[in-house]
Length: 96
Image (cartoon, rainbow, N blue to C red; front, side, top):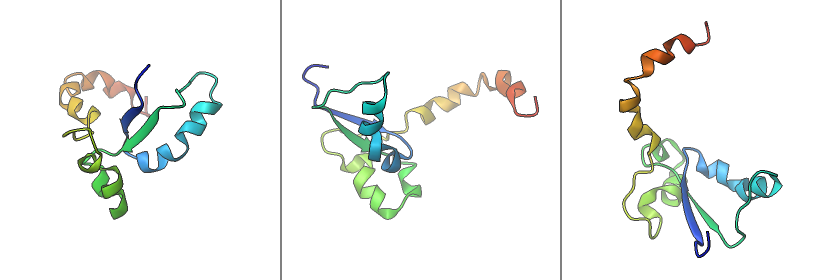
C-alpha cells in the first residue's frame, strides 16, 4: 500500500467501532496496518440518521472531504439480488 495515506471506511456503528480500531489491529497477530495510514470513519447515509445528531456532521459522507458522492450503504444495495436465493436459507433459522 505504498503511497496510500488515507482510507475511508463505512460501517453502521463506526462512531463506536472506530474508537479503538488501531489498538485492535496492533494487538492482533493476524492484522497489520501501516503507521502512516489514516482511517477516516463514515456511516452510511441511511443509517446515520438513526444516530445522535452529532454523528451526522462527523460521519455522513456528505461532509467527508475528498470522497465525492457516495451513500456508504454498499451491502444494502445487494439485498434485492440476494432475495433470489433467500429461500435456500429459510431452513437455516433457529428452530432447525
